[in-house]
Amino acid sequence: MGNQIEGGDGSDRNSAGDKGAGKLEQLNPERNASGAQVKEVQATNPDNFTSRTEMTALSEPLTVAEKKAARNFDSFGIDMGDGTVQTSKGVQQKGGTTVYERPAGQAVEPMPPPSPALDEAPYDSPVTLNVQITNVPEVSEGVKPEEALQHLNQVFEAGAEAVRPVKEWLATPNAVNDALAGIGPALNTAVNYYANTPADQVMRDAQTALEMAGDALDRTFAYPHTPEERAKTAGMIMPLFFFEGNAKEPISPQAAETMGLEGMSEAELTALGIRRAAQDAGDLMMPEVPEHLRHLEFQQITDDLVRAMETKGRTIHLAEPGSEAWINLEKGGCNAKVVYPWCNEIFAKQGGPRVALLEEFLHGTQQKLGLLGDPMLPKQLPEIHVKDFMLRHAKMLGLDENDAILLRELKRQAIQRMEKDGYRWTGK
Amino acid sequence: MSNLPRFLCKVKETLQDASGVTVHTDIDDLVPEYRPGDLLELRKPDGSIAQLESGLVSYFPDPEVVFSESGFHPPVAFFFRGLKKADIPPGTEIWQIVEHQIPKDVKHRKFERIEKTQGA
Image (cartoon, rainbow over all chains, first blue to last red; front, side):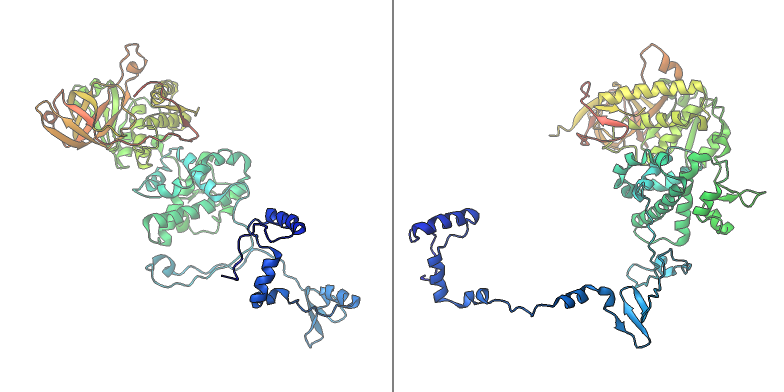
């Protein structure tokens, strides 16, 4: 092992070299061979060091004029043979500076309709995408698409009949809940979204969110949807973005223009859940909140309300006075009840308060939204949440002051019970 | 560490409903680890045992009850589908056999995790 360098202990170094070696070891502790040892190895096996000792040949230095010429990139010109020169600024006439430019802009040519193969073909079938690339950013500067989509959660709480089908769609078993769950943290960011975002930007974000929702639909059901299905989905979601404005007022011309509504056919508008005002084709109306949920007197349960709920898949058991079902409700000290997680059946006293039946109905919506039975959520949360929602939308639901007083008290009691479970309500 | 099965409550009264039975219990609050839809074990007075999928009854109280000073509170009530009143006699013990882990730290814009104010 004569060529092996032994661990340097300084024994073969001279005293002058010891200081230098010591500093070197401080800088590079792994280098512990003395100069003599290196020379010994080099003499034995010089090939290992050949490449390190050869110097790279230097090219001849440039003259000052050559350097200036090299920096003059504009003059790297290529003679095109037609009296022009190609430079970094484009094609120039010899002796002139004609520059041909085309400003960047939005693609103006309409996209051809997508091939049905994109939406309907089996996964393993090859498809070719025809894509137009633009340089226009499609994402709001003020809010990310995920945040805009997350805003749906807030608008869901509007609870109007017009938006309820959306909730039910979203709550389809294993529907977009998973997709939405991934963007939950964005919720807080969206709180001040409307306060800080220009209206036209809201519209653009809505479009982006709708596209995301369509993508979520695809992911959820694991197959591409037809354009009709996606349009239907978008149509169901779209009211959510506008509902808190005023469903009775026409969509603003600016919004209609931004959303590209004016160019749509009646059939396309219908698919999106939008109708034209009868007398004025220029006015586009969002779906109206159904009559039975508009300015309710909210005194007693009515047949209309029961029928409306039954059309939503609920079974309403109205207990007649003196019946066993009535007595059962009396024993519970209640006017209505529903069973988690089977909220499709509602039990209520005939002639009982509408607020009770409506509250139980909304539990069914919560169940479809996945708010019931989630171990990550406090078990009292549904009770608080539904009353909180009803109070915030008391006017829309037609609740009077007595209803509000009752709901506030029930909410307070539910919050107390939630605190016993180790949660504090931080909402209003 | 799980200590299941865990005794939850006793059945005070069984009521027949359209599609099953509602059982009123002797407690007015539930452990937070229970979730609607969980399997519960019913140990009947005759010694028989059954494990059934349970629903939790949500009552909308009568306003007079809410504002009364009687201290009445709707009981914790379970619902069992497809059963008859005689299937769950009063005195039946209800035991928890499924336990959900409660998150120790939850961030939400409308609630937050705190220490329990009393044992549940």
